[in-house]
Length: 89
View 1 (cartoon, rainbow, N blue to C red):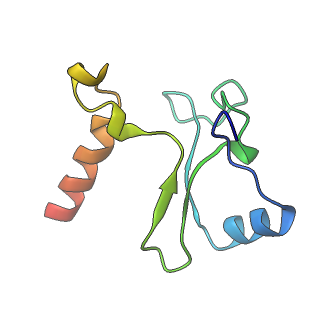
View 2 (view 1 turned 135 degrees about the horizontal axis):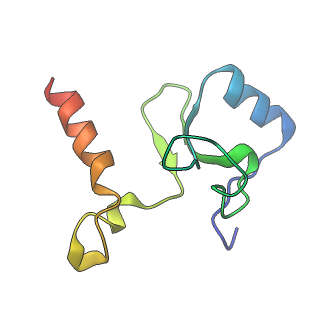
């Protein structure tokens, strides 16, 4: 999709939800999943999904593009910092 929104058929959506494979949803800074936060119209605000074995996470936002001021911002850095902290613990 040109805007990067997630779309799928009803059966896939049901499986993703039933198996807790939705990793991320577009939300407000307070964590509310709203239509306004879902800027690209992704189905059920899905921003990332997990593979069935939980080894692969595919996501549409590109936090790796925003980890340094030279790249235009640091909004993506907290995601990577939290992953490192979790693995280190």
